[in-house]
Image (cartoon, rainbow, N blue to C red):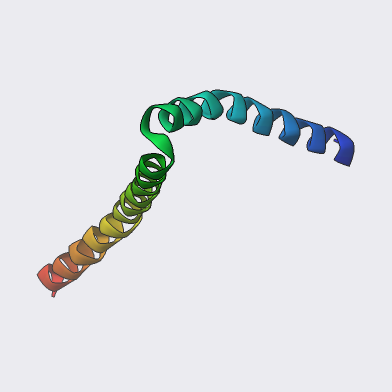
Length: 75
């Protein structure tokens, strides 16, 4: 695959994502106004970051706890 083809595919993917997400953001902006839209948008970003933290951090901690308990049981 040439560099030009890869660049073209990336541009197409970005354009499709903008066509899907853009109208949703525009609708929320027009309904809520600038200040409420900003609050809504950044609350969503913070929520996504917290959810990502939960999905990444918590399972690893359960794994560590399981291995601690399992290793003590063998001894």
